[in-house]
Structure formats: C-alpha cells, structure tokens
Image (cartoon, rainbow, N blue to C red; front, side, top):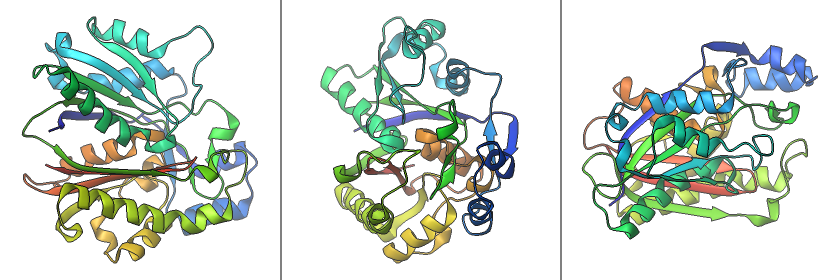
Length: 309
C-alpha cells in the first residue's frame, strides 16, 4: 500500500502583501478588499531572486530520508499546474535529477490536473512503484511553481498565488502515512477557464458541492467514515470557499487546517503537502490519525486522498 516516507517543504523568506500584488497587476480595489475581508488573504511568499529549479531543490533538501538513499529513487515526478513553466530547451526535471545525484531515476512532468496534480501524483507514484515490484524503490514527487507572468499573480474570483514548494518521498508500501483511499473527477466543460479568462459562474456554483462529493468518495474508497477523519489538509485558495465546502459536508471549520491561507496564499500543487508539514509540526496530527488531502485544479479536476498518519 502506497506510503509517504517523508514530506518536506520550503517557503521563501520574502513576504509580499496582497495589496502590493494587486497594485502591480492593476486589480480593482473592491477585489482586493474582498480578498482581505472575506477570503482571509493577507500576504504570500515569493522568491524573486531564485529560479524554479532552486525553489524545488530547496524543498527536496528538506527531506532527511533522501540522503544516502538517492540510488533507490526510481521515479522523479514533477507535478505542476501550468503546462509551460520554462523556456524552450530547458528541462527542470532532468537538471534536478542530475543536481541531486538521482542517476537511476526516470524523471517526468505530470500536468493537466491543474492544482490538483500534486495529490494525483502521490497516488500515481505509488502505483508505478507497485507495478515495478521492487520493495526497496522510492519515488520523489516535487510540487510548486514560480509566478512568472502577470496572469498568474491572481485568480480573480479565488486567490493570490505564492511560490512555496514541497516534496515527498513515496514507497510502494510502508507503515507511515499510508494511502488508504483516493478519488478524482474532472469536469471537462470548464477546461478552457484559466486566467486571464474569468471563471464560469456555473463552475463557482458547483465547486463546493463537487469537492465535498469527491472528499466523501475518497473516504468511502478508504473504507472509513468521514466523521473519523481527524484533519483535512486543503489547497489554500481562500477561507470563504472552505467555509462553503464545510457547510456542504456538514462539518466544523476547525477540522480544516487553514492556518497557512493568510501567510502563504495558494502555492499551486504544493498546498496540501505544505499544510501536512506545518500541521504535523503544530501537533495537529497524532500517530494513528486519519487525515484527508484535497485540492481543485482549474480545468476542472477535483481530487482527494485519505491517509493514516
């Protein structure tokens, strides 16, 4: 059964207020007021002097279990939101493998699931390892991106983007953070709605009920009752969205780890993994706890996974 050997993350030191970002992209004052007042957004972390490879490597370097086990890494999966993140001729995944000494790894990019790609990549990595049949092999999943264009700064109806990154080591089996259930659904009728194009009002209307349904499906796939979940690790879009989703689920907001929304913003595919690290450090996850990772990607893909800590 797929298990997470270790999860690590990196948040850039530089904190940028969302008001400053709004001014940079000429966002309407009413939008930024809504972000602050109702969405719970205050600032994001950015790394203006670091390229994509540097920010991803920083997350990988936080994994203590990788040191000395580089030869065991069979796959390196870069799960990303945006299809194109680098100039033609550059290959971040190959460069990352070379810099980290992962000579035996097959590196590739996974996309087309928007910001839900990271949760999907975790499940896929475990399936690839199980199919290989090597009990000692590992996969490295890396997540997070750079805000490299004006259109990526803000999703108008939703959030402000940050540059935090995360990485996790995955094994085909193990006793720590075992993946018990996974569910995903894609609403392809919304496939063309990426910034700077506005989101379809129907997508916004269906968003919370669809996410709630996928989360319940993941719990059912895990064979557990939703009420047994100790914590939900969300994508950090905004607080109001999770308020509506909790209402659809009939659960209290305190079951969702929302601490990072005001200080990191939405870090593409990395959010659930960053939240895992911080929730663990804060004592919100205890041995034996069931928890759920959830994310939504524009396009529109909804994914959720249930694990046992």
